[in-house]
Length: 307
Image 1 (cartoon, rainbow, N blue to C red):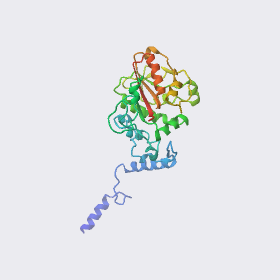
Image 2 (image 1 turned 135 degrees about the horizontal axis):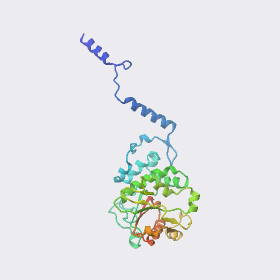
Image 3 (image 1 turned 45 degrees about the vertical axis):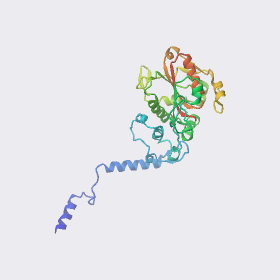
Image 4 (image 1 turned 90 degrees about the horizontal axis):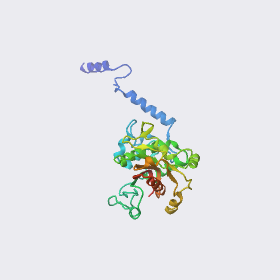
């Protein structure tokens, strides 16, 4: 008799069609989202930008939740920043092919020392030759996945990479230069002939994706640095630097840049942005042009650094 009454009570709480199973609040919403993701991945799967294989971004452990502030990553290591930002663009296998720039590094040019022991210090080249810049930093090494992505961006027209590359640069700007008073942020310019051939300025395009504050017709960062993409121009249509050694690169790029407004440049602190720091010949020639125009300090930030 007692067992029967318990059984009847159980039945009285059950909703029609539930067979006594209690639905957890919000479960249908979660199921719906899961189904939508499965359908979306089935119909429109992500394709890796380097190997062209399909992959599921939701299963990638480094993925950041939608709406998260990626600038919070500035306190993280480069090895964590890259996979978080690039989770939509690389499969797990290619992602593992990324090489961050890790200490110890040269405190000026930013090159990574082969020896993994010791503190950051000046390399032999920066000790022996006076450089026209204060420091150079990069988002990663010019190798593996990052190198392939840059090639896809510059030479294969994959302009969709401009946004995540811009995010990478912005995070590393905050990481390395947030405490440095920078007056102008200047992209290394293309010659107008190269621009017509390529169809877009790959460096300026990355910078356009930064979260600028637009005031008085200018783009500014939170700490007041102004985007100045017209202050430095390329007046010499140089041959490609690819395949040239350090000396020939320097000769090829000599006097290739000019400042358009020396009054603005005078006594200013400049951050130059480029895609790749190889030997430094192009960036250093830009720095020399800026220094001749009166710039007080010049810094470099690039997507990749050749080691």
